[in-house]
Length: 349
Image (tube, rainbow, N blue to C red):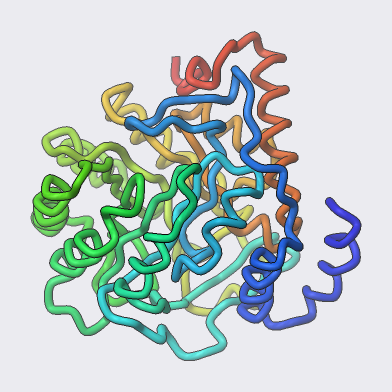
């Protein structure tokens, strides 16, 4: 943790969480966040769904919803960044307050509701992105949409030429009806619409599907079959949970999706189950509760080819990225892996 983070974080913990999120993006733009550039090594460099990553640690969707701080965030040590979720039309999201810290649990609850500036503004910002760095976009649907799959397709059509991958978000618990898109017919329709646009892009980028941690084994098997039957590049496991069984803070009663430390076991179980179904036929990106290099390594050993961070940054600051990346390199070296790809799914063997 930097000196600035040590001094600022205790103060910021007393400020509304969404305000702090906004301040973090502002700090990124004026170069107040750590900027080591992409951290890499021969052990950390990896190839995931056609993407050449300097390291397998990325930032999850939700941190930069409207793609306003792409260049500085790509310099924080990460291997890749996912912006969004972006919807076709601008959207204010749900009423405030809508982001809560559960400090004893090292967790967040959010019910943001896909607040963002819309696809047109996002496309303009994405078109000015740095040439280097791996950048993805989370595809969202407007609350007023009659066909969320059509919204996903519209966002990809406008923004797809400027990103390296896209994610179909069918798992947010904070927008009515989105999780229903994980049902077979709806998911197949969404994938088909996005795939149609994907094939028309100047370069056909990989498309992932982001799933819920609250799926049962039967749903995981069904989604895996759909993924294998389509041109979906891989699965991001997982989004936030509506489950509250592992939290103690009174704020746990707040509606919304829970992320952070309590999500780690649940999301890792779902990740491992998807790896069991998909094997090496589709890569997985592991998200949910990662706060240490050991957590990232556990996700990889459970089947993730790459991982993403989010909630832990609210408690430990952006210098955590460098700590996790360098720590992961050390763990791979300790266990005799010459490259992170060799460790993927090691605990399932």
